[in-house]
Amino acid sequence: MDSIPPYLWRNANYIKILAANFLLYFSFMLLTPLLPLYLRDTFGADKELTGFVLSGYTLMCLVVRPFSGYIVDSFPRKMVLLVCNFLFCLLFAGYLVAGSVTLFAIFRTLHGGPFGATTVAASTVAIDVLHPSRRGEGIGYYGLSNNLATAIGPTVAIYLLQASDSYTLLFWICLVCSLLGVLLEVSIKLPATAVTGIMPQRHFRLGRLFLARAWSEGLAMACFAFSYGVISTYLAIYAKEELGIMSGSGLFFTLLACGLMLSRLTGARGLRRGEVAKNATEGICVSFFGYLLFAALHNEWGFYGAALIIGLGNGHMYPAIQTMFINLAPSSQRGTANSSVLTSWDVGFGIGVLIGGLFAENVGYHSAFWSAWIVNAVGAVFFMTYTKRHYVTHARE
Image (cartoon, rainbow, N blue to C red):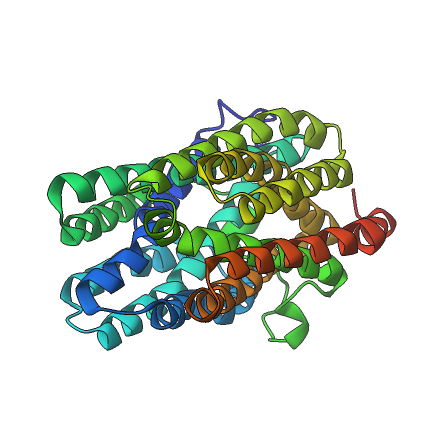
């Protein structure tokens, strides 16, 4: 532990994993908001089919991530990270050769596997290279790299698509950016425990797939992810078809990320002081009103205002809940804790994509967005009445 510096911005290994994480999510977010348009324009897919095709990615993440936590806790983390991220990079080539919606769905579904494993390995490596006194704050800034990618990726994608009218160009950019992330990770140096694996034995147990102590935190997280899954996936088509905003999803994600970044910066102080449950509560309350605004107000004010408010809320909420998972786990289950929070997000997000597609196709976008707000409200009530008390009782802070 003495070899880990007690500061953030002179910690070269932390900066490298931060940059690699940005490139991972940038390549992911470059495509995410435009894939419904790509499937419609290239293969004539309707909203329901689009929901099924895109939910395969999240379903594969869900299947892989619990096992990823076990593997990350059992084997050399750097090697796990490099192998998984390289496979994630390689599968972008599949989009370039997919000539049918079926083949695209296969590649998209397979792509979720290495993405799920890479995010678990990368977030665990980030924690490994952080000094314990800066862990909560470091997790917050690590998430900020996701937020920057969320802001820049869709905006760049929309600009490039309008300028070139080429989805192929976007696929190539994703491939190159993810490869740069792999090259950055090659030079990361980890503490000895992370290099060799920290579990004394590698016998598989079902209990290693999910951090059981954090079940209530996971259930709340899944509710919040459901809401985000509905809105983020069908945002571009909704803006274009109902609001007449042709390129508004780029500004939406920019405002969302501005809110995320601002709240991460202000929330870092609370995490540094150990006010984890308080940070999560504040973020959940703010997000609740953001989703309500999006569902209730069907104009540009509601569209863009909700983006900023949801960003402010999620930026406070997500790193706090992730820190709750980490504080509920022993050090030997750090990877399992990370995979558990991501699995919880995957479950909610994937169901949101699927249910949102069914609602949008059969009863309209407004019903889909109201369902997002209702599930978010359920998660908020559950967190306030049970989860927060459970965490305070069982945390290892």
